Length: 97
Image 1 (tube, rainbow, N blue to C red):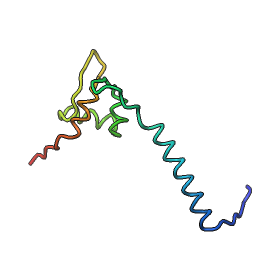
Image 2: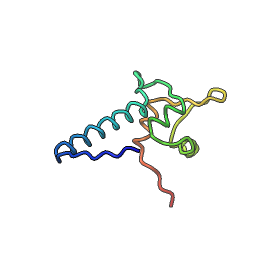
Image 3: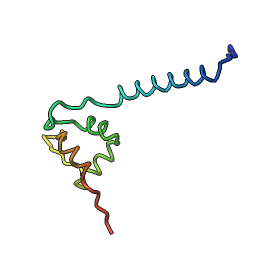
């Protein structure tokens, strides 16, 4: 195994770290975020909704069962309207007492 010792000034180290973090964030943003549909009535699949809301599939099913996330079923497939998904985020959450 090769060991290297590199001497960097504080400014160079800060710039190196900033560049690495910026590249990592850009890479994560490009792979994790789905493209936003062109029209508000566009239909999304389960995978698209989970990526858009950054939730897991089980959480998505829980939100559907609770009525928090409106959906449509065609056979075995589930569809979500983009505008309805975004509107459901604005609704206040119900607290059960």
